[in-house]
Length: 207
Image 1 (cartoon, rainbow, N blue to C red):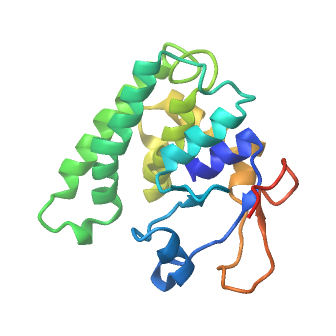
Image 2 (cartoon, rainbow, N blue to C red):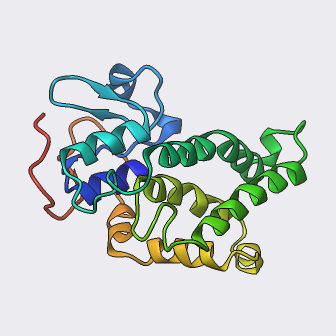
């Protein structure tokens, strides 16, 4: 989702092939043997296989919201690293405890709580994680905070993180997120080309 968020914010329009991972098309395996999503194939044949890599590619092309310019670069990098490392691991254990029988879920929740409380503390100092406007860190972390909140929305609402809850609600209620949440049927070879974002947002990436 964060790759889509940056593509939409940047106004990059690309061919959209929605993939069902339990039924991976051979074209995905050919482009990226890792067969994970997202994958972005550039006009020169370069393949971007990491969501953060796609975000940076899109924003370096066009960054109208100044996400790359906002915040101390090291702070932004540290926030993203903590999200993609320890928090993502705890998130997976909270979402799928049956996949981690040797990892007590209460430990994962405690780890997640600590990180989320740190974000709450940052938001007590400014409207966004790195200052008065959104940065790459906000955009990169938001989908994962949203995943945690979605595990149990009632529990999320009861937690003592009013600023973090408001921050997430602000993202979820915005027009940009509405664009990100566009749906598409699973892609198969031969079907009509579909673009993301669906409304025109810029020139398509050439095939």
